[in-house]
Image (cartoon, rainbow, N blue to C red):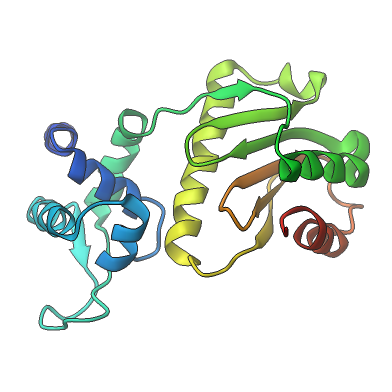
Length: 223
């Protein structure tokens, strides 16, 4: 029964580009107002409002504020919307890593800086500019551990993080953070043009994390 419901939601969302944009905009975001969604999806407010209403009727999106409130109307995905998104995201966001050398000044600085700071710990360096994801560096041994599909999934994850940043810290020009996994760590940085950079490295136990973040913010992502 749940599978049928999700498939129906999939058909419903994919039949409208406006619903697709709204669902993409809310995916992985904590909450977002129509104004924030409009800024980050480039949808006209009339199309946006209609899409939100339609998605609410299908229990995919919900309002996190009193109905009578006219400002601060935050929307997010329902539990069902989150479940539906897991089945929809590969249909909505088509991303593949493209092997490419860094070309912009910032991307060159980023690769040079993480290479110097992380040395042989560096595994992958990626970039997402809002249109395509590029693999700027890959250690041969690290790459042999992953299939092309797993690398594609990594690119898609970078896109999701960009969506989350756009919605939750839209006024912050520069941002960098490190996520710890086992056995790798992942550095994510956003420049003033909202290009997103990533660098994975392992092991991370003897890396000066504070110095790494400070260097990335002050030297790489700032103009």
